[in-house]
Image (cartoon, rainbow, N blue to C red; front, side, top):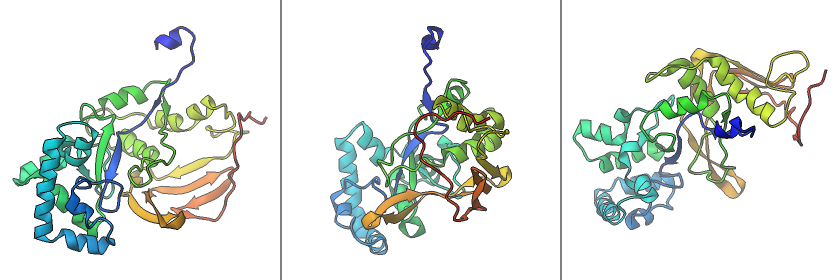
Length: 293
């Protein structure tokens, strides 16, 4: 605000939900990654890994090593990724991104009268070892969405994320556009909802105009026909999953969404009810684009 009052056109990029890491047996990280006994089985095929981790003797060794790690690392990122059970959440289907402290692994373990580290271990073994744990690292300092609400309500904020695909096995935030409509426009429980019009504008014209792409972001004559047809009541984020479809079988996290009836790019339907139509009308953008009269 101070910079803008001095005539400086500065806009912060903000995320519409907490930014976090996904942990799992197939993911880059999990709470037991730095336990030597886990490392001994970490490269096994998933089904063999799950079978090995169900062995009580191996589990006991991993628990001892984990306790030693926690004693040696009292704070910092490693501590949070390995033992921050108060900010670890089991992903549901559909995913509920409006996190509640009462749904954390620590809170669940307390209700059940067990240790949080044991619950985390059991959680990783769910769904044949495919269960993921979500750890919000940023935008969740007070364990609520109040700060996010303030940021994304600013007309100067640009909605977005940027990690350039650097952490394919740990981060999957591409669904932030979908979750923003689900949480802020439809389902928010712990605060006021936001107008869907302002959310759509934040994801479309506001960002496009900032980049100099003046030919998109509005449904009007002369603009590109870039349109999503959405069934808001059916809109949902499915849990992220691991896929091995990068070159040489490389791993990445992917996530599906429900509720998109059609995605239209430049007038061509590219997706219909979640299925790709084969149309590829997109082009490489080089610099600003003016509106064609």
